[in-house]
Image 1 (cartoon, helix red, strand yellow):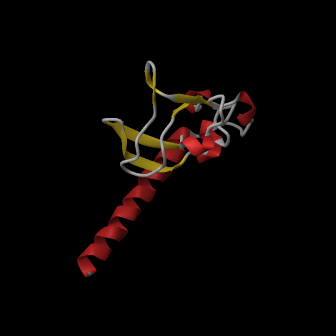
Image 2 (cartoon, helix red, strand yellow):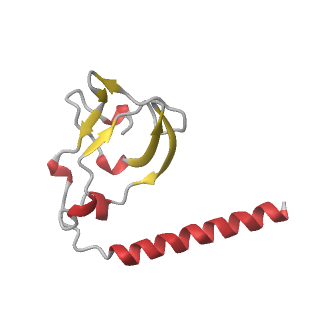
Image 3 (cartoon, helix red, strand yellow):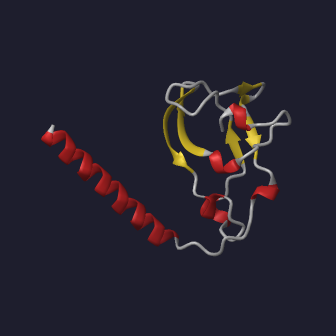
Amino acid sequence: MEESNVDGKGTVIDPTKARHAIVKSGRIEEMSGLIDVKTHLNLDYPDHRITTCVITQKFEKGAKVRFGKEGLAFAIVNRAAFDHYGPVDFTRRYFDMVEAVTEYHEANKKEVTTS
């Protein structure tokens, strides 16, 4: 979570601005787009709920993550951020994501070969 989105008590201000990221050597190496509220903040879908976030300077490759006395610094997602969004068909969503990523890569491949 970008540190500008964490209050003085270590609570996430707006959890919809969270992203998945890969941290390596204390810096963001890779990151995704914003989380999906219907899975990450859904009381009806507990398997993928976001409850804590690593705090980082900014959401950009190479940005430093914050450290505390015992390792990575974390922010807590307030329980009030969660709501009932209904059941989630994870398998369908997974296949839709794979299809979208495949289409994205195919479109970029065509763009590279025609350039």
